[in-house]
Length: 302
Image 1: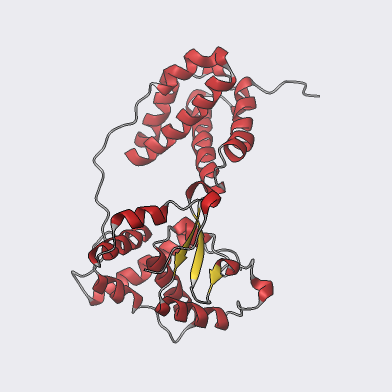
Image 2: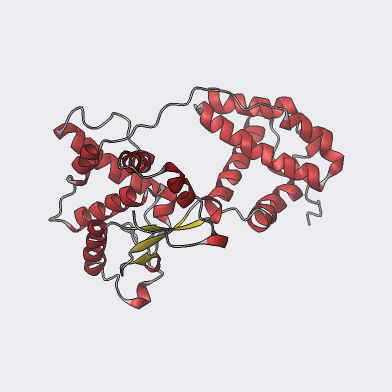
């Protein structure tokens, strides 16, 4: 029988991921998974590069050079960019801030690792689409097919609401209000909730899609609004695939109208630009984006 006790590192990792982040910080599932992935990558590095198996790692074996080596490994061996490297480091920093509060005896170790700086880099500007570019992409789905009608609904909603991909992923039938004033409930970062108004055209597309998909019955409220072939919520990768498919098609028909690098976030950025161009006060837009679970309200239609 193995009577070995868990290491100090294992104890704090478990509490950090399963108690502190969800319970005290109230982080969303996606955010916690991001922290978990950073720690998993660090454990894999320790195992593959230093023969430190996860069950043998203790705080005594973790040093600043070890963490710095991990960050270099991410870039040089795994091909990660500076953004990913900084995200992994931010997760590690969060863990060691937690540890120094829970275990003051590790404070020196924690401060050494917290002194590892975020690497500076020049951020690329996010491309946005002119309104004609949005129209070109939305005209690409084949409305003679069921998938085409679904994709038009999804892309229209992505643009109209300025939703993040992760927010689109979590939408269920019960989050949609088709009666006036039509709104949709989105779950953002940190479990923040916002109710976003829908344009009449988007409501018409949603009604047709939901009726065709038998989603108007009351017992379907917990059903995903968009799903894949397995009947599961459409993943972020699935949303990106759909957008890339129609973006490429629109670019071939209208060269010069669609920028080379378009992502789901470009739709969100485009919506913000179009609102500004139409005269919407930017202060109003910021207030709308910060509605939280503790202070939810329906935003008046623009």
